[in-house]
Length: 339
Ligand code: TYM
Image (cartoon, rainbow, N blue to C red; front, side):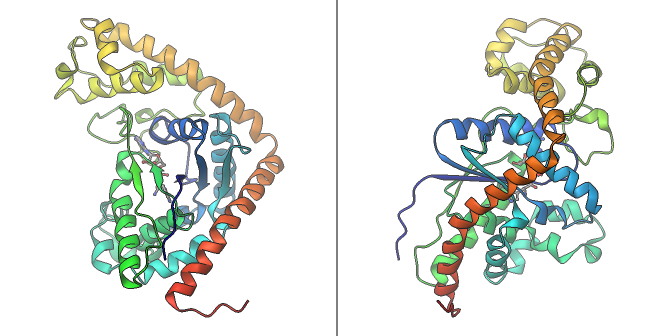
């Protein structure tokens, strides 16, 4: 069997907590660019992944709607991209089960995200948290997606997705699942904490000052940037001067991600300036980009029924692509499907 593959982009974000500047620069902004380049794009709120750790049910619903609002406010257009929440398309879970039977325990045991999230209390982690990457592989492969834009931290999961596709194709002697390309590009694929330039900016960090949330007010964004940790030296004029200066590098990369200017152009213009001068410029830039998004989110969130309708329509479109691929998978594996 040979499935001629056309380009199809898939990516997902967990509806847990706020969207951060890391999610925005590392993922959502790039989702929008891909949508506008005319490729078929499918973006998902992965609510089934969210429940691998316990979520308050009403907060999960609110967070899913807020994430949808964040997607749309950032420029994702439900007419151009398929936007939906994972649990509304059953094919993800069904293919996830098949992949549980393809992936090996040893592969999942090596996943660093599981080790980080389960921590010392591994025995008490949910089975879902352990199997998380097989569902992620199913999210992607149930659409035969060829390209997956993500931040750096998802690289290992995407390698596993390739391993699963390869093993499936080999086990059943087919050329059915594509070997997906991760798209981890640009300066902002790993936005770091504002309090510690060696740690990733994360929605789960205990300190809210470590991250910028898309819903933060203009005042709070400015405050967080002005209080961001830096070293005492002025900005260098060359990119090499950022080596071993993680906090300085992070702020320059954030400026770059927001402005679209390369780090070198930014440093050519700002080399020799103190951070006390650079930070207000960065804060102004961040506010000018994030505040309109945040305002639009607030506006959209006033009509939750409208959001649910968009997600429902998106799910119907997604299922149309996913269901035939799932059916073919079942057939390949040897499961009877009565017509
Ligand atoms: P999640 O929800 O943790 O993050 C969503 C996206 O944001 C990126 N990201 C960052 N990028 C740059 N700097 C940061 N500090 C930063 N923090 C987060 C992530 O790399 C990701 O692209 N497992 C995924 C969700 C998922 C998925 C999928 C992704 C489920 N199925 C299928 C792609 C395809 C996750 O937990 O992302």
